[in-house]
Image (cartoon, rainbow over all chains, first blue to last red):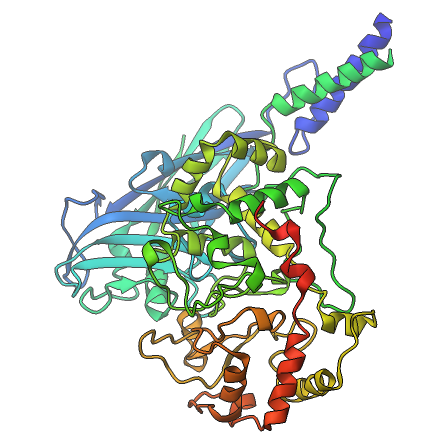
Length: 256
Length: 351
């Protein structure tokens, strides 16, 4: 009886182990196995020129010479891929909403990264077509986050709101969305890490991505707030802004 | 012994369930299967495949019933006065009888005619301008629209979460009592996409069933309809699921430019989605702004009132020739598209 019990317990355990492992892993053994995966902490910093972005109370000047404040700065970072020599990692369910008003949204861990040396990162600013069109989403993609258009299905990939005396409405409102076609606001960014990082099972690698909001109004398209101050649908102005924010990020740190 | 084995295996299973599992896919929230379905979804013979296939949203009795309860719940509106069913009345094929444009909370008026709801699984887009492309993304629009239900989805979630019956229904439908926007929209999608209207006199005629004997006038109307209306309203769905400029003059009050709002394409100015004509005799008024209250007025528009815009539809660059008799015959035929089974189906009624 006892023997049978043990046998079925073992079987039950095997069932458990099979069921809980998301990815193929080495079978459990009595000795501590060498870790095959590690983690990387992604941290986002939002700057205006050389200083940290402060919401609401600080005045900034864009390339065109227009003064502005910022009350909201949100963007989607999705589909993150790390690549290195002979190895690569694609984050699963890679959908993150970075919001300046919420510090907890500005960093996250990527786990189950195969150990190895990585030297570049690729990500999407915005949400891929599939997740714009495949129905109700949750988590970072939950429409309650205020980054979803109800009148014309799709995500707002990046949102900047604030004030500018140069704007005829005194407001600036850039809701960059649209996931397909000529005026898509999705941009894929790929850049080398400032130095290669070695992911092992026992360390925590940090990658810092810094967004410079001034670049969003600067290059290649200088944005004049007296004429471009309210962008709320996919159009040529949204495309100009997206072409700019594609160049907005830089890697400011990569290491332990 | 057998009992012991079951206990052990169940124990193992419980342990699995309680262990931190795989990170959930944000796009997937699969309903638990229900074996006692009395709601089902089948593609009627001869119909095309639907656009919505319940992918990642398995149709279940529990999900359907939850969607129905939500559809008829006024708590989805800010002041608890308006439900989806307020403006989508079953006897009017889920359109709003006698209301040219939508009526929301505080008697506020929208700018467009409440569309009828049925066979939505075959629609590739929603609203008169087609701005929404998945039925799961449709309800957020009226729920948050200031002149319709005027309530942030988060507020609706708070109200529903305070109701034990809802928590229980979400648990049954989705496997836990978490109430979030995704589950609300998926449940509503189950209810709405399961609404199929395929049992009109016309359908019985096509299927060769008793009750489908068309009169000589109805048959004449069918022939005329196919000739004069069938390009934009093709059988069996009686819509081409596309957008056309239907030769209406602009109502300056609404100044509704239609599809161009979504695409930005000047060719789409004043284009609107072609509605299905099933149940059309019950879903007055007509057109995107509800300007016509009778089928006769609609046909008269196509016979004598076509305004030729610069981007007029190639199919509608001139009035459609119809005699008075033709018109009467076509209207007689349109009346055969009324599906009494659907209009009185208790599965779709407020419980």
